[in-house]
Image (cartoon, rainbow, N blue to C red; front, side):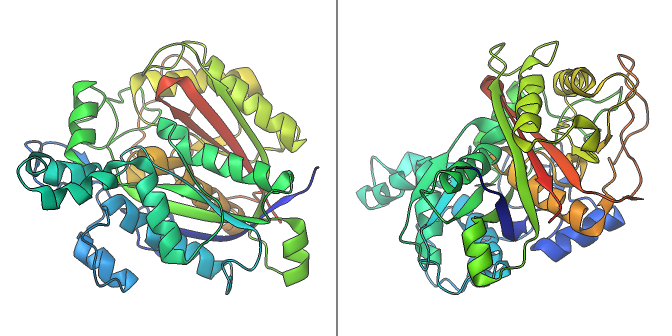
Amino acid sequence: MSQKIAITGMGIISSIGNNVEENLQSLKSGKHGISDIELFETRHAGNIKTGEIKLSNTELAEKLHLKDVKNATRTALLGMIAAKEAVENAGIADINGYKTGLISSTSVGGMDMTEKYFYSYEDFPDKQKYIDSHDAGNSSLLIADYLGLKGTVSTISTACSSAANAIMIGAKLIKNGILDRVIVGGTDALSKFTLNGFNTLMILTDSYNTPFDNNRKGLNLGEAAAFIILESEDVVKKENKKVLGYLSGYGNANDAHHQTASSENGQGAYLAMEKALKISGLDKEQIDYINVHGTATPNNDLSEGIAMIRIFGENKVPDFSSTKAFTGHTLAAAAGIEAVYSLLAIQNNIIFPNLNFKTKMEEFDLIPVTELREKNINHVLSNSFGFGGNCSTLIFSKS
């Protein structure tokens, strides 16, 4: 069953804004959200910068009008805010009016709660109730409960491509007539575990990340949540819904190369882009902008650049930029926030700048867009690649 997948709503919270409009204004003005860590204790405070959302859990709960948040992880709270905005943006009054599901994604899950109570579990049995919050699916269930959703709820965790795969699965559920409407995206909060883990891998920069720059030193971690609403053509027509854009293509492939590194020839990225283009029915020349994965690690940017050249040809790669210099790398949420940014690019006919770029990489002749650029944008290709070689590509198109 082939049908167009409409996007009717979107919501986001990141280090550059607490909603869609604030994110858009930051992207347009070049205001990044990379800063020193303030909200949790770590030996790396003052040395490692992150894309931290400057709201405490209590303040997040107040925005949600929640009275008791003792069992809610930061990952869940961020997800609730973004999902709530997406549902409201889509004008959904009855969340269960159609066959509706939630496909959420996370890498960190409830790690912040685990760090807080881990050493109390044995001696303080009353704290053991927090063990359940560690599970990746816990945040999805809390988000669904907050929204009042009674339909399908599932959780995806494929590292940094998680939200892209959640979006892809949501589209397939609609195409196969299983659901009429799906809330899809991802959420991840910062934690000591994540910070220490990436620091051990030696892929964090001690400054600001510089995607696709020859002198790039690594990524800044970030935290965020973003969800979009996918709806079937039938629901859109029946409800006379405003369409923000369409999910026209998607592809997933595995690099099958290394646990944490991309292959030298970008095979996984190449296959994911190739599959997404095939499903979309678009010619590669129709892609107006690529929101690259662009983590600013030496390995990723080289591998992704090679894959893009393989797909589009030497000197024929479309305009591209990485928005991770704004937000940091938000892990499972990355493809969710970059889906929102792709839709904003289409709606406003602009390409967001690749901040901090100075020197072209010596391996190839690729230069990202470094200033806000006006351009008629009909189709955006968005890449998200995860540890374990899980590579995913989404294509968003103008309505």
